[in-house]
Image 1 (spheres, rainbow, N blue to C red):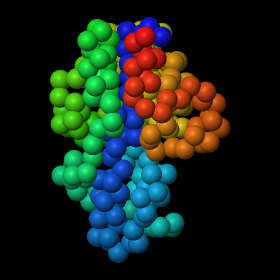
Image 2 (cartoon, rainbow, N blue to C red):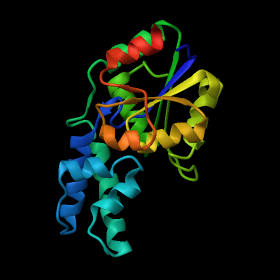
Image 3 (cartoon, rainbow, N blue to C red):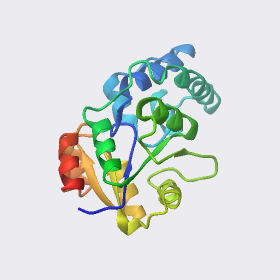
Length: 216
């Protein structure tokens, strides 16, 4: 595989953010007397951004105004605790360095809020990514192609020369909608059977396999 750019999803692909997200959601639920969610429930809710995460986490038939309060608390709390337990997946920093050494451009595209994406990218991958793009007001989130197109424009790379790396059904749809090739990782937030139902056939189990696919 010869690409000019590699675009990565963030949560479940380059960063294991599940524990911090679980803690933040449960803190926000607790603040308003709602029952908490398990780690596996939060795992299944991830992929479509913060608003959808909170919507799925509150009990069914929660009044909109109460759900909005939980969301605002999560928005306040999570940025202050987004790096308590979060860590890069094994081999990911080394992979990004190897790509850069070969002159391949790299980007992160996530449904997290743009400021959170940039803060986490800088904290864990300082100087390694050329572009980081998160959710912005007025821009459709993944699986729409818009955030990916922003990244491609900033990278100055055509979509035929880029590949998308992700871990979820949302990422599979994002790659299809963006017209990008895709490689799916199996260390993230979706199980293989879910991804196979989406038509995925190219999987990797560890970062070293990505090195082989992208550089050799």
